[in-house]
Image 1 (cartoon, rainbow, N blue to C red):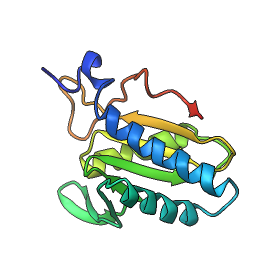
Image 2 (image 1 turned 135 degrees about the vertical axis):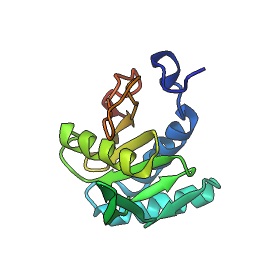
Image 3 (image 1 turned 120 degrees about the vertical axis):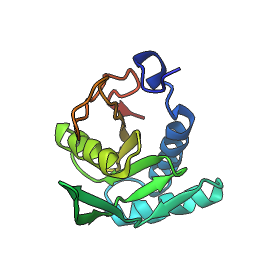
Image 4 (image 1 turned 30 degrees about the horizontal axis):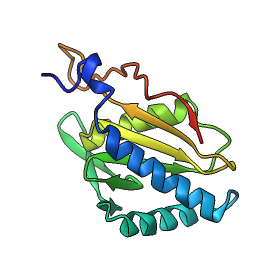
Length: 154
C-alpha cells in the first residue's frame, strides 16, 4: 500500500491536521482576529500543551545545493513530529503560500503541511500534501490534487 497514491493520500495525517486546525479555531475564537502572528503562535502552543499535542519550534533543517549545505530552514512549527504548520496573518492564502509550503515540505522531508491564516474572524486554512512522481528526477516534486486541500474557512 503506497501512502502517496491518490486513493490513500487524502487520508494522510488527516486526524493530526484536524487536531491542529481545531486548536487554531479555539485560539481564534478566544483571541479574535487582528493580532500579530507571534501572538497566535504563542496561544497555539499553549493550546497544544493543554491538549497534550507534541510540537517543536525553531527546529533547524539543512538546505543543500548540489551536495553542499548552503543554509538552514527554520519552520514556524512541527506538530506531531509529522506536520509543518505555518501561521499567517494575511488577506488570503494564495499560490505563493502553497508554493512556500511545498518547499518547506521538501526541505523537512515531511509530506503534510497546514497553513493557518488568523487575519479574519473565520479561520482560513489549507492542507498541503507533497507527493513524489513515480520516477522523479532528483529534487523534483509534484503537488497532487487533494480533496481536503481546498480553501477552508470556519
